[in-house]
Length: 180
Ligand SMILES: [Zn+2]
Image (cartoon, rainbow, N blue to C red):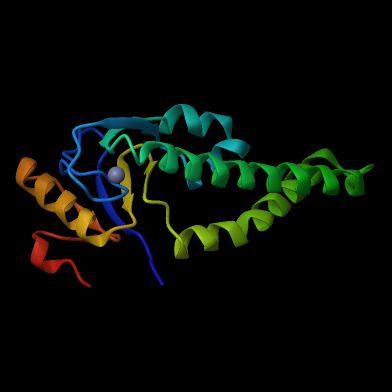
């Protein structure tokens, strides 16, 4: 069983990454950029304004060999999630004909969320190599590799001694406190 190790930093700082590929862990000077989505994009599906608030691009190291794998995993997982939501909503909508509009909206919202729960659980137990989820004040950096996450923590602790850094939602002041 693998769970991701999540490091939370304030949204206003530009994080320092180890000079290693997030996928294979080998040294790499190459980078790629992703914007924060994951759970965020499900929320933004229902509340378009959220995506305007939370959108943030992060550049991270990845070697040229791993780039296609990384983006394929990301693309396929997002596509599956969107397909589930769209199919379920379209299958469910006809059942609400004649219902009050706001009741229908709430019901379809509930059904949409319920439909993606299995995939969210899958994402927890089979985390992506790397992902970010941004909120207004903080950004979660989610790493599949705990080693990589620990290196990331240490570098950012050194670079920003005064900021609050959370590891798996707990305040951590030095690397020794990161539980196995
Ligand atoms: Zn790599």
